[in-house]
Length: 413
Image 1 (cartoon, helix red, strand yellow):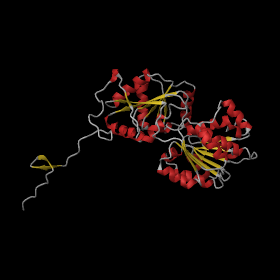
Image 2: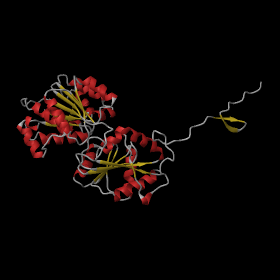
Image 3: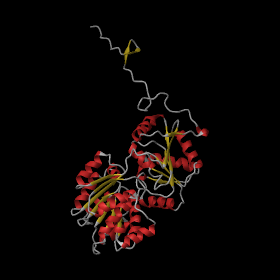
Image 4: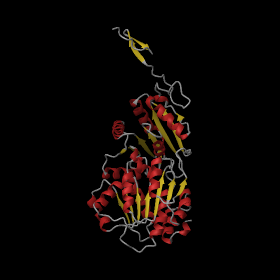
C-alpha cells in the first residue's frame, strides 16, 4: 500500500521504520486517495495520524508550491497539535510541503510568520484558529482536506460551534475526515451528518472492546487520606518507566502534587491553568526521561503519546466509561503492555460498577497488604453489580415520635 505513494513519502516512511501499514492505515489510505469522506473509529496508538497524513500529503504534492493552506487538521489540545506537527514533519521531510501549527497559549504576534506565509498544511486548535479567522488574518477558502482528529474529544470540550464555523470558511473543501475513539456518540454522529458527504464509515474500535494489553486493577480506599497513602506507595514500589496519574479537577491535581512533594516524589503537572511554556517544559522533560510521573486532568487523556507510559493511576474514578477508556489508553499502546490502577472509595463504587458493566469487564481486585483499609466494598450487590442499599422510607411526625407511613392527623375544629 505504501508503494502507491510518492517516492519522497516512501523514503521518509522507510527511514522512520514503518515497514507495514497498520490496521487503520490499511483500511483508510486507499479510500482517502480515492477522494472519499471518512468517519473512522480507531484506538489510540493505532497509527491513525499516519493514516490521514500520508494520503493528504500525497494529494498536496500534486500542487505547485503556493502560499495557500490546502490541508487542515483540527485537534482538541495544544499538546496533540504539537505531536501531530512532529509526526507530519517526519513524513514530509523530503517534500516541498510547508507545515505549520497554531494553538492557544501563545501570543498571536508570535504566529505572524504563519499569517504572512501560510503553510500548505496546518495543524490547529479550534479556539485560536477561529480567533485569527475573526480578525481576517487567515484564509481557508483553498482548503481541500479538512480533518478532525479526536473528534469526540473536540465535542466534549465544547468546540462544536467553532468546528462548524471553521468548516464554513473551508468553502471549497473536497474531503472531510472525522477520526474518533468511538462512533457511539449521538452528538458526534450529528456533527458527521453536517460535515460529511456520502462518508465511508470504518469502525475499528469500540469502547467495549477488551483491552488485552492493559491489566486493569482496582484498590479499595477508606477515604482521600487513605488514597494519598496508596498512591505514594504505588509510585514508590511499582515498576514503571513513566506513570500518568489522573484526577477529575485542577484543584485535586494540585493537591495530589503537594502531597507527592511532601513525600519527595518528583512529578510534573498538566492542566488547563498551566501556560503553554510550563506545559511544553513538562512534556519535554517527560520525553527526555527527566520526569517519570505526570499528574493531570483529562486534558492529557487524549492524544499524548509518550514512549514507555506503562502505568496509569486513576486517583479518582472518571465520571463516564468513555473517559475511563481514554485514560487507560495512554498505556498499552502499539503492542506494548501496561497497567491501569483505579483507587475506589465507598461513594465511587457504583460509578465503578457502572463502568465495568459498560465495558462488560470485571476489574482485578487488588490489595496492598501494608495498607489494607476497613472498606472492602459493599456487603450486598444488586443484579446490576451496584451496591444494594436500603430504600428511603417516608417518615412523618406524630405525637413527637417518628412513625412510618402515617399521615398527619387532622386537627379538631
